[in-house]
Amino acid sequence: MKKLFILLQYLLPQHFLSAIMHKLARCEASWFKNFLIKLFIKHYTVNIQEAEQPDPESYESFNAFFTRSLAPEARALEDDTSTIASPVDGTVSQIGTISDGEIFQAKGKSFNLAALLGSEQMASQFEEGHFNTIYLSPKDYHRIHVPMDSTLTKMLHIPGNLFSVNPTTVHGIDELFARNERVIAFFETSVGPMAMVMVGAIFVSSIETVWHGEVTPPRHNQIRHWNYLHKSLNFKKNDEMARFNMGSTIVLLYGKNKVTWAENLVAGNTVSHGQVIGHLSTQ
Picture 1 (cartoon, rainbow, N blue to C red):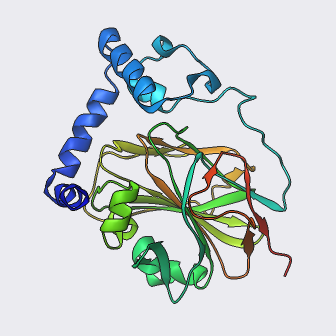
Picture 2 (picture 1 turned 90 degrees about the horizontal axis):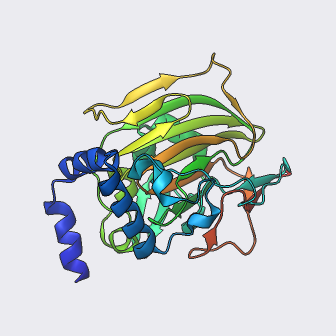
């Protein structure tokens, strides 16, 4: 079954299906969006009670429900500047150190750092650094937050495939995260550069940021660049920075000897937005 599922990933018209999902997710017909939302809540056992608006029928579309905000008391957020907060709710897919320009993906598989970031120059900032890959399942909260005080310096949109990013495909498709479409936000922090790679996937109908709006769609065939060095786009720890309009994966990157991950944090752990996942290096 797994091999058939992987084969199907190559055969499906990924971008076409995602374009259809983009339209369906924004349909405001009451009967349709209410049916879809309630079906989704039941199937994925979504905890709607932690949402700022717990009434499923109050959302204007399925996408509005999917990118719902949390009630203020739903997450314990702290402002300790010596720690790193999880930027999302999700499951740690892999975590560790970048070795020889490669990031561990799954047993027997890695992906290239320069390929992920679109250039050797961008990758050089994170050589022998630290990575944390977090998978957001359909039931998770899908807003993305900055893990520490930071200043946005650059954003890239790198076109690519839209393979699923669930555990089956992560284990079955080589260099998955460096092949899929992605939006990368680069920040300057007190410990140097930080990158947050938002990986697209099939049915992830768009990725949007608070400073740009929707980055995808429209989709393009070439890498797009935005420079924010002179914009003074400063973020405080736990500020919202982006949204997955349908779910996917985040790859968080830091430079060499800049951070240490939380001692008990390993692949397979679930994390919540605001949870401490690491500490800034004192070296």
